Length: 406
Ligand code: CMP
Image 1 (cartoon, rainbow, N blue to C red):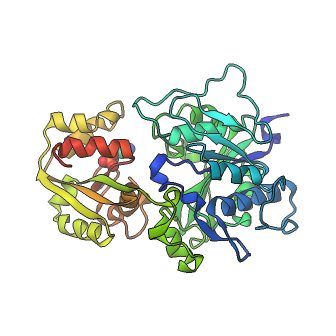
Image 2 (cartoon, rainbow, N blue to C red):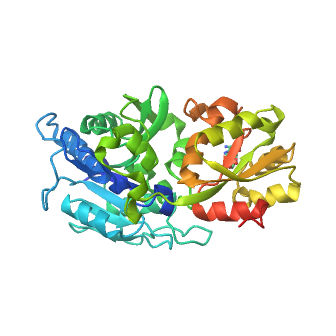
Image 3 (cartoon, rainbow, N blue to C red):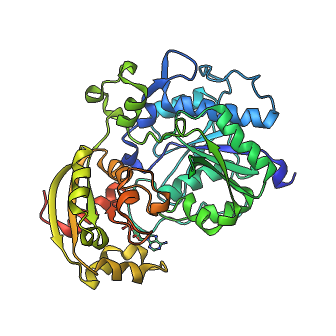
């Protein structure tokens, strides 16, 4: 059977990067699509994704009940692998109940995989991929992608979805798949009011490139290498709303869900975190420091340390050492030493994810309206602000500028 004749496999990334997901955000109850009783967010997304795949595969639009509760052996999750960051009992139990596979993303480089219905082994001679360079235990983006791909090595393509968009429907997923069926070499991306986003579908010819991603590199890296292959599918921006933190979820679905943010069980509580913020030389020079700090405080994040300084070339090189092999490394360091910067430590529930959301995409052209980069950045390099991208980098970056902070 040729690659193109095999079906598309759904990969639901629920792993995030350890605590970035706000503990077990995907277990927060949300309304069931078309039903009353709340279900965990993971179930809602999984059922819609699997139904979208089934609908596209069998071309039986409308004939399958969507949003029916999962029951053991119901097969509601057929054709989908859920990638988890750790074998959290409740999530694994739920995935089993829905008849999907699950894979555990692991930072060690040997992504472990367990298929509820018997996941296929990796192709012979295939390595699970390189371990990321830095030390740590929480999985990074490339680990999650690798774990998903290893679970279904023979698919004609992989539709990567996340729990961040629980409002998408089976029809949305089916539209992405139908577009792929017409363009089997394309990378199919959901787009909302002209802004490209997730879910994203990669064809089998890009498998090796996806497996070769390292560290925090995600699908965006592969997209950037193949702009000519990108095909967008416009979806309703209201359904594509990115619900990144538990607070967003409650905001979208309302307090009637009965979720008491303050008194949730520990597994559902977002972690109190700290993150490093830098207001870069372009934004300080343009006298946007005050507006940016105001937006940070206005978002509910608390400033716990603040300094203005000018980096030396050695400090800039050390801070951005992770990018030293990138073509933009020298130019980035030159820019970062070109004027004063304002560094601060922000604290709050889910501070890392919340600040990254407030900043917007690295490239301001792709940043959402209202984000700091949309408002204050000039281009992908002169992008106004920096924020840590995980708990381990946050700890390193905070101690780089504030070694005495307790
Ligand atoms: P920051 O969040 O500080 O992390 C790394 C920085 O590298 C990023 O913001 C940008 O300023 C810069 N950067 C990332 N990608 C590119 C690129 N393609 N060209 C130039 N600079 C980039």
